Every structure is written in C-alpha cells, then in structure tokens.
Length: 147
Length: 147
DNA sequence: CGCAAAATCACCCGAAAGTGTGACGACATC
DNA sequence: GATGTCGTCACACTTTCGGGTGATTTTGCG
Image 1 (cartoon, rainbow over the protein chains, first blue to last red):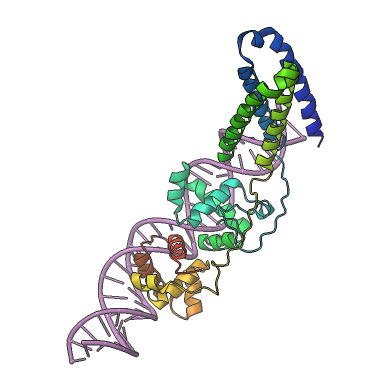
Image 2 (cartoon, rainbow over the protein chains, first blue to last red; image 1 turned 45 degrees about the horizontal axis):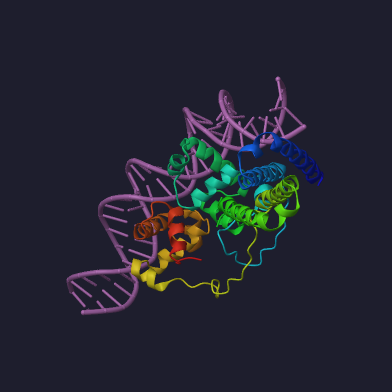
C-alpha cells in the first residue's frame, strides 16, 4: 500500500498550506469553530475522494463463503460474472428478462432500440450457454447472478 | 448511497464534539495550528478509511441462516393454485417452463404433442395474467407455485 | 494518441412462442 | 343422461425470439 504513504505525504503538505493560509485570511474574519468545521469537511471530502479514486478500478478478488441463503438485498456473484465475461449491461438485461419483460419492454425501459437488446441478450445467452431466455433465467438464478 | 448520508451525519456529530472539546481542553493548552492539524489529520484519516470501506467491500456479506425458508423439498401453495383455477397439468408445465425447457422439449418429456403444451401454457398464462413464459415464471415464483 | 472492449443499431431470416377456434374422449357429478 | 371439467390434438395466424452479419460510436486504458 504505497498509496497510503503517498496520501499521507499529500495530507501533510495540505496541512502545512492550510496553516499558512490561516494566518493570512481566515483567522482574521471567522471564528475558530467555523474554520475548524471547514477544515474538517474539506479533509473529510478529500479523504473520501482519495479513497474512492485509489480503489476505483481494481478487480479486488473477493472470496466469500455463502453457506445457504443470503438474506438482504442480494448482490451478484462478481466472481462468476467476471469469470463468464458478462458485462454490466448484459447482467442488467438478464435481470429484466427474469422480471418477465419482453425485448421491446426492456428496450423502452433502457431507452435503447430493440435490436440492441437483442444483441445484448444474444451474447448473454452465448456466455451462459442458454438457448432460450427462460433457460438463461434458470442458469442465472442458480449461478447467483440474479436474485 | 445511504452510506454518504450516514457519513455526513457522523461528520457533523464529530464536528460538534470537537467544538465542544475545544473549549474545555485544547484551546487552553495548545496553539490553534496544532489543533487544526489534529482535526485535519483525523478527518483525513476518517475520510480515507470511509472511502476505502465504501468501495472495497460493497457486499459486506451479511451471512445469516434462514432456516424457515427452505423447509423440505418445497410444496406448492395449494390455496393459490385452486384459487387461480390452475390444474395439476398446468402446474407441471409451469415447472418445466421455469426449468428453461422449450415447448417441444416439454412435449417430449410428457409424451404429448407440442400443440397440447401450447394450449396448456396458453390457459396457464391466462390464469396467471402473464403474456410471456418468463413472466409466468416470475409470477409463479412470487406466488410460491414453483420453487 | 491509438487500441480494445463495450455499447449501440440495422437488416434479414428462420425458429419458437403465443392466440384463436374447433374438436374429441375420459371421467366425475348431479 | 345431461352437464361440466380436464386433457388431448389440430390448424391457421400473428408476434416474439434468436442467430448471423456488419457497422458506428463511446469509453477505458496504456
């Protein structure tokens, strides 16, 4: 985690800068509470932003054991999704297929053409090894790709 | 992103706490620069921690046992079956549809003609209020007619 | 910038699914 | 014996699905 170190350095530099600016602008006008709140909010936002950007595009192989039934709002098994090479759009369409929508309805809901939905579903069936949409739904459910 | 909201609330609470403590301990002893640096470092660390935890483990697997759900090999809700006027044959075909079989495959498995399967499924869709087989599967599952 | 993956869309064509109507036999019930 | 339900099947017709091909645009990454 060299990123953490880099982050620490940047944070220190920013602290110095803030301490310098304090003498010039802020202290003379605002009370200390407001200043502290501003600094806190700024650094909190900065920290969040850094944390997000640092871990943005990482696969992060998650190994979790699912014993039986997963309570809660359900999350797709990312391992199998990436393992099968299923894209986010395809997974989205699989969910809508499982919800019983026709290609035309899916197209209307996603604001794309029906042909696009067909292309997506076609590639999806190929990746799932399904010949029909009902089969794709069955496979998707058993593979925990959809609830 | 309810997490963001939660974070905001925590941040506000911490700001209040810090403002309170300021009057009691810190201001009397330390200079403002040190205080600000501490606050900044604290919030920066908090921010980066939150940023990491928000992205790294979005599943945050809540593994709970659900013993009441899967009790036995599943039995269809007979009340709803008779309530909808669904016959045993239709329910059987609904199960095969949910298994991803085509009409022809269902016909082969039940030793009947494809047209028979069509009429059964047609009446089934009518009783379920479904327009497609995928929709029939969805309705059947939510109504506990099929596993 | 250039590449590769993903997303978008179009067209054709065949297969599957779904609708509607009609019909026939088995079986139970009144 | 008339009635009703259920399962079976046929045939014609429309709609939906799915495969195949090719193309363009968008986007993420090196």
